[in-house]
Image (tube, rainbow, N blue to C red; front, side, top):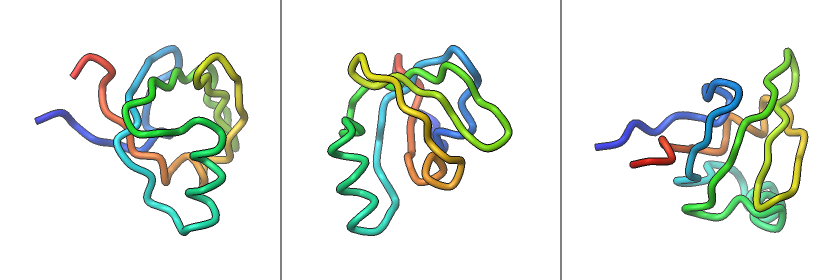
Amino acid sequence: MPQVLPLTMMPEGTEGKVVSINAGRCLKRRLVEMGFLENTVVTVHRSDRGALMVNVNGSKYALGKGMAMKIMVTDCYN
């Protein structure tokens, strides 16, 4: 079984697939509108102290650590 972890735990430069979003209705809707759908590939470009720079469907986003903790991902190749 593939290991599921929060997006914040992924190292820089790695890809993962979105498994689920563990958030309230409003935040979940916002993330889905940004492209964080189930089985979507997410690439972590940079992980700084307070934010993550990620690439989803060709768009780059800056996510706060709190928001990124709610996005559960798995290794892209599982």
